[in-house]
Amino acid sequence: MTPAEILRFALRGLSANKLRSALTTLGIMIGVGAVIILVAVGNGSSEAIKKSISKLGANSLTISKSTSGGGRSGGFGGPPGMGGNRSGASSQSSGPRTQAHDLTIEDAKALVSSTDAPSVKSSSPVVTSSSVTSTYSGTSHSINEFVGTYASYFEASDKVVAEGTAFSQDDVTSGSKVMVIGTTVATDLFGTVDPLGKQINVGGVMFTVSGVLKSSGSSSSSFQDADDVAIAPLSAVQQSITGYGGLDEILVSATSATTVNSAQSEVTQILNQRHGISGSASADFQILNSASLQETVTSSTKTFTVLLGAVAAISLLVGGIGITNIMLVTVTERTREIGIRKAIGAPKGAILGQFIAEATVLSLVGGILGVAIGLLGSFFKIVGIQPVIVPSSVALALGVSVAIGLFFGSYPANRAAKLRPIEALRHQ
Image (cartoon, rainbow, N blue to C red; front, top):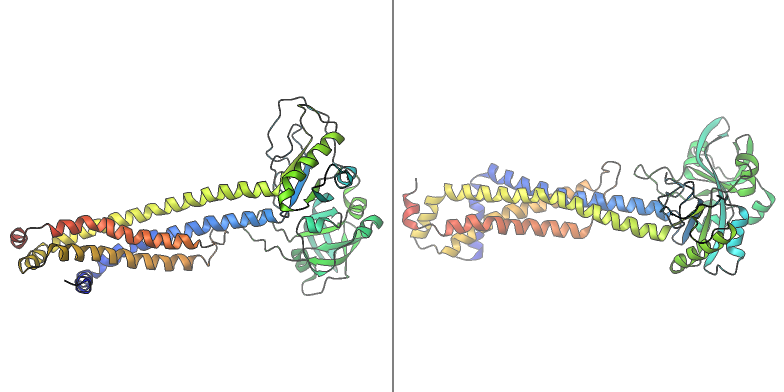
């Protein structure tokens, strides 16, 4: 028999019991669709986290005060705008503790003025205030994060001004009351009105809007709305909102992505000297290296995605067992038919090929439908995460579904091919 004839017989056999074939196909479809969607959810979660981290800037280091009193520099804490704990998760030292020093503007200046830090491009002192009430023309909005800093902060943190202009270092020096706002602040306070040049009352002080930041594309899957932010000159914010205490952090930009680790070593050495930290004493500051954090997160989310895919693959296995069960029932029901075909000269290969073809068609159709369901499901958010399809998962899931048909259909097919004609003809 030709392959075309074997396939024709297989399709005829499947159409004889349409409901049973459809239910078997449904099991494979659910398995394939689950694998594609869950892997896409894991990948989407990874992309969302990496996007949040990238808001710090690819070449940036974030220095903050160690609130634990004994954290070594280099520990990972949550960056601002991500809802993280600034004390981080740095390792604790068993050495003696030193008196904690606040981070100061002089510390920030030392990082760029010192010849011991050739890998440091810029250093931006930062103070922040949360939930600052702002009003414009009777409309009120609580700004999630009000940042006071230097002009170099925009480049270091990868903040892009989409409309208007950012403030300059001269504005910082003169204490100008100007500010750049995020899209959420612009929308909530001004609606459709152009915010450029308008004055906002922030804690009783009038700030003029000089620019609007490009939307970061934050969503409900992010830790918080990164567009609900306002950035103003450090001197103006200290004078009117935060006061002249220590800095919340210092944002350092390395000269390139390849010098981030070198910049971290140089910054650590300079701050250790300035804060009188030596020997085994614990540092009173910590450094977030966004590049290292990116690598750590990527590794963790890959493991998470593989785990999700493995869980979903179990449903594929269940679908394969279902194919074996259905094909065994089919062989039993069609024993007499098999005997007649063998009695009139049908070779063993034809019988074997027909039942393997039936199992493969079931799994292939189920796989194709599962791919369609998976691709369709990726257009919708799942638990606040936008799935991102991994092309390799589509090919792998479809390939595995076909392999399942071949593997789980081979036993029933082999059993049918081995039936003796005389015994098959006797079967009622």
